[in-house]
Length: 340
Image 1 (cartoon, rainbow, N blue to C red):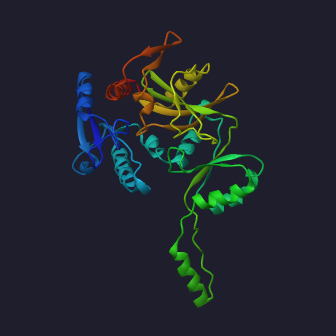
Image 2: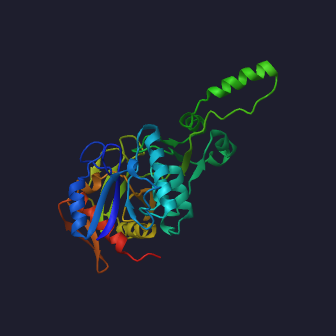
Image 3: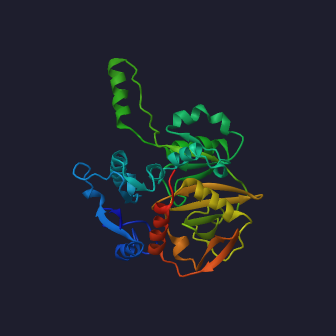
C-alpha cells in the first residue's frame, strides 16, 4: 500500500468544512476510504513532525493551512511545511499553493508567474507599504479599483475605491501598523537633533485589482478530481461583493463555457482540488481568487449534484455529497497521474 502522512492541527482537526465550526473531516471515515483505494493513511499532528529522526523524502504528505487570528499558528505551519519541502517530501498540494492560502499578495504573484492564460486578464498591483502605494497614486486616479487586504477572507478587508478620497484614506487605514519605535525616534530627534530614519506606520500588505463593473454576483466553482460543483452567489444588497453574502443559488443555468474555462484553470494548476471565484461579463471570464487547500466546503456539502465532462459534453449527475470520499478519490487520482 502507498503511504500518505496526514497532518492535523493542535485540535486534532483536519481541513475546513461547514460540517462543524473549525473543522469537520471524519478522519476514521477518510482513512477507510483511502484503505479501499490501497492507501495507508498515517494521521499525525504537525507538532510530531521530527525532521531529524524521520526522513520524509519522497513521502506523500497531505496537509492543511490555518486562518487563526493574526496568523500566529499559520506561521508555525509555514515553517514545518517548508522544512518538509526542503527534505524532499511530496506535498499535497505543493508549497507554492500553501503559500497562496490566506495570502492574496502571493496569490497574485502565483497568477503572474503561472502559464495559465485564462487567469491573465486580471493584473493586480501589490504593495507592502502605504508609502510605496503613494508613489504610484496617479495611475489609480481615473478608474475604480478593488482593494484587498492580503490576509482576509469572506469579503472582510475588501473595499471599492471610486474616488480620490477613498484611494488615499482606505489604503492608509487598512495598512496601519503603528510602531512605538517611531515615538522613541521622535524624542531621540528632540534630544540629539539628528533625524532618524522612521519606520513606516503602514506595513500591512495589500493589493489593488481593476474593478469589473455591473456584476450582480459571481460563480463559486469547487473541483474535486473530475467533479465540478457550482454555486452562484448574488452580491450583497447595495454592495459589489458576493463572497460572504450567503445569497446562494444552485439551480441556475450556467453561462456557456464556464465549466470548460474552470477545467482549463484547474488542469493548469495541477492540484487534486481547487476552489475558484469566477465573474462573467460580456462572455469573458475573470478568476478573482483561487484556493487550493483549507477552503470552505459549502458549495460541495449543500449540493445535490455535480457536473462531469463525458465525451466532450458536460453531464449533470445527482449524488449525495460526501467530502471524505471526494478528498480520497481526488488525492488518489492526483498521486496516480504521471508527473512531469
